[in-house]
Length: 423
Image 1 (tube, rainbow, N blue to C red):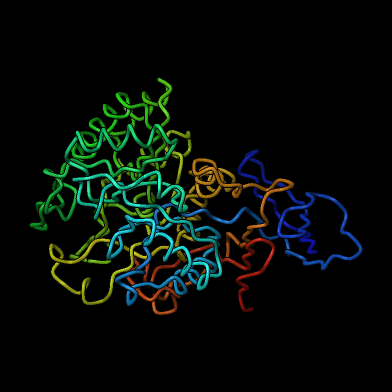
Image 2 (cartoon, helix red, strand yellow):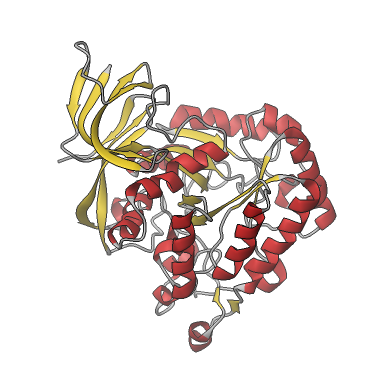
């Protein structure tokens, strides 16, 4: 039994922040703001923030096929150091997670190697090729938590409508990438003056709006339960708000990079800032930040995408997209807090409570009976990020060399401490 005392409790469910204590017994939260039991090990949190562990929706792990970029063990260690207690892994592996056998393999490997919880999404179509839907029912039985082809947009609307209809009949959640693939093909940046000055191929923000509208039409037709993985432009927000107001079972997420960086950060062709979709204008960034604050956008995730040096040390157009973010998600989110855009409870509602609720998981709450998946952190502790100190195998972070604030002091999963900061 553990009693955590002298903590600032960040409650994303009640949107409150207050001094208090928490008791852990048998892997669960046994009491909040109760006296320490006589048999408990008492830990003084030193006035630091105690919050539900982050539930990170949309993490790429290299197993199978790209273990040199990220393994279950390295991803788990990075997650623990970043306060992420549940990873929701993407199926964009080699081969794709599109059969019960592959899903059972990665589930077993993750349980053996990772100190944090890992749940897997499965591909919506076989090979993520958009031609034939996967065995959604069998994959659900094997433990798939959601279905997605990730950034491979299903262009055949008949195939997608059938998959959505079948998913609806089983109550399965589908996650989609709102982009019009024809407009997006070959794009490296967001279209505009900056892209033109740099001579880089750009994509109009309207590609996201068109992709959103196409998917919403099919959702309206099928009644499917749907999550848009990344809403990054102001143009997509009014129809998203309208869809929610009209009662459709839709949620939306965005990445920490699109909340804290903009198109100018690309600078002189810095490929660590090449992500998918590309970084947007400052107006788009602020609109998306406001949408998180008001609840129009439900979830913030890392969209952790490890890439090796060889795939990033290329001309900007040819370089691979993506950035690692399991360890930088929390300190990057603190930028939004310190700028006054989002309170700590609002941030953890988007990073912990909402993703857990959307996926039907019991995590993300500071409530009696909830799993004791917790992160203790200092939101004000400054540090200089050195990418070579990251625990991920790949080091492709846009925050390398930047001054950041927010250090994780300890992480617990099921009441067991899986990370403790030195010093």
